[in-house]
Image (cartoon, rainbow, N blue to C red):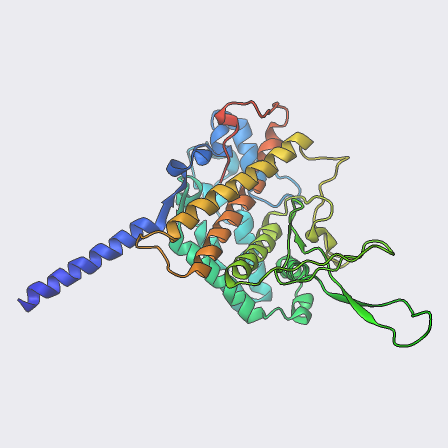
Length: 376
């Protein structure tokens, strides 16, 4: 009887574990019409454009473009020999992520090892080709965000000395999110007396698309021109909002450092003071635009749609009654935000490449679904 009970208990445990593993893989392709077709899927019938697209996505956008027919280093297959159905897409498309992690290991080996969780999220073709998001790997990603906040402790002096692009962007994004607080003297009172000091803060973290986020409990004093009135705003602070925002800021810095998709004027990335020997973050140059303005707007809309759709689906899953559901609302909010930001950054990266290789093809809002689906 005891052996029989033990066997039943073991089978029950195995069943729960198996169910948990199944639930952890969230199928984005089947559950979201927006993700039925990706950018590279739309180019599969155009072999030359496919190779150009992959050559673009395998490197940061401010790097000189390589010849699609040139062999990849470190034993990777030559891109020019790959068809749309051959090779591992993850070996090529996510090379900028692996490159960034390798660079960070040289500067922060202890903390950089934790970034392997981000690399592992894209390590196989399940995520890229099959559009299946592993929620267990995503959970490890938000864990490393907390680790970086704990390890680095936002020591501005230490981060300022770190030569890596990621550290410089992370520092700038965090300072901006918390208002980049400065104190300035008030004008000298006409009748003498104590000359006061007042706080001036920035408008918050502004991503490469021009969208702003600020610490919710921050009273924002904005001074643009002499004599301008002070604007004050503040909202309540809660763990869900702050945890989600910190995950957003971290992932924005990571993917901007890896992909370096050109930013619009006013973005925080463009306000970083780089050393004279360093290449500044690329700005979208209107006079030498890599893609037409309407295509840039399309990339932005697609990226925001991807973020909204994935955030909604992941939020519904992690809050449900499944084996992977969580009763911790702060963790759920952080996971859905992290998934949405990752989807947005990938759509930005692939979208810019897609329109760079197809900008001769007119794309309109009235195009059928094969030209309006969002890539993840």
